[in-house]
Image (cartoon, rainbow, N blue to C red; front, top):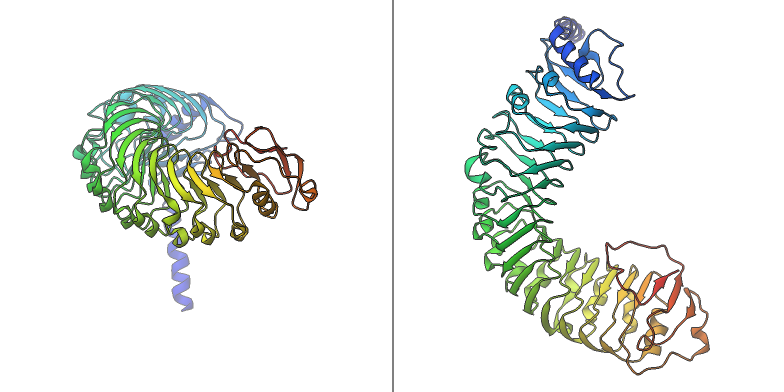
Amino acid sequence: MAHAFLLYLLFSCITSTNIRACTHTERSSLLSFASTVSTPLLNWTTSHDCCRWKGITCNQDGWVTHLLLPSKGLKGGLSPSSLGNLTHLTHLNLSHNSLYGSLETQFFLSLNRLEFLDLSYNLLSGELPFSLPSSNIRTVDLSSNHFHGSIPSSFFQQASNLTSFNVSNNTFTGYVPSSICLHSSPFLRLLDFSSNLFNGNLAPGLGKCSELQVFRAGHNNLSGLLPEDIYNATKLEEIALPLNSLLGAISDKIVNLTNLEILDLYINQLSGELPLNLGKLSKLKFVALDFNLLEGALPPSLMNCTNLVELRLGTNNLEGNISMLDFSRLNQLAKLDLRVNNFTGTFPVSLYSCRSLKAIRLTGNNLVGQIQAQILSLKSLSFLSLGFNQFTNLTGAMKILMRCKSLHALMLSGSFKGEGMPADDDMVDFDGFFLDCFISSYQRTDFQVNFQSNFVDYQGWYMNPIVHLK
């Protein structure tokens, strides 16, 4: 055993001595690159061997294969002429710096071994080159720059091994290249075109991405219908197309996407009823369909989505008696937004079983009845908005809600119409939160409450509150 160990050490020493120092050409190219950027974090002159420099990895022949300098304070122009000489480069990561300039076609063509390219979060601009640099490339991240123009149809011709493509947060125009799945890699897992200026319809083709897991194209100017073949991409885990102008109904074929966890389509012009068998998507965690034109009742099968954490269906034309729905199975539900619809009934008693609830918004419906003491079972409830309904017994509601020690924001504007402010002496000062000024929400919209609990941000859930945190 000891002899084997000694042989291993000897072999390791021999192997290590065979690793050559970087070539003169590679060293000169890196120094040329460094001369164009200013940063206090690089000290590449301490060693003659560039393979020992920070952020550099070489192969055994001394060729630079990895140049990884994310978040190193690089400032200056990207130097295609110097980096283009690193012909053995497989991994290039210069993300989260302040590099400017454009991506020249010649620079791309010289890096024909590149597998990983991350230039995100810089100041790069211009149009994309004619095509990707290498058939070996797997990951491309050009997000959060200033690239513009359309993405050439030829850009993906060599992308036979591409798995991830992210160009979000730029100013690209033209059509989303959804035909990428027809002409390039069968291994694509992530496509992110969000926060650009893409317009027009989404062309068919996404259904050919048999491995696609994430498709994002939100915050653009997309219009028209969702392409039917998107429902053939059965490995999809996320569809995020918010803030566009998409039309039409959500197809019943969506139930084919049994791996779907995130469905984000808020602020579009989607219409029609929700698919009756939506509950077959049992892995759903996040559903945002607010600010559309959806109508009809909520499908009872939705209550089979027991992994739901956030459900947002506000500002649509939905209707039906929601007190008949059984929310009790949604034991992971943290945020529920059904505001500004046409729902009827009482506050759903089954919601009291959703012990993970932190935020409830039922504002702007036709709900009646009284707030029940069972709401106290929601120990994590921080945000409650019940305004513009037809609830009764304001005094009783406040006596109950005063005991909700976790509440951060309470909104009752437009409910309890005709009822005066509570007159009980014990409503002036109590343990839990201090009541400075309370006037019926029917008469005033400015009562303020100082809560003892810490403020929690619910990403816009605090718009137009009747109760403000002091």
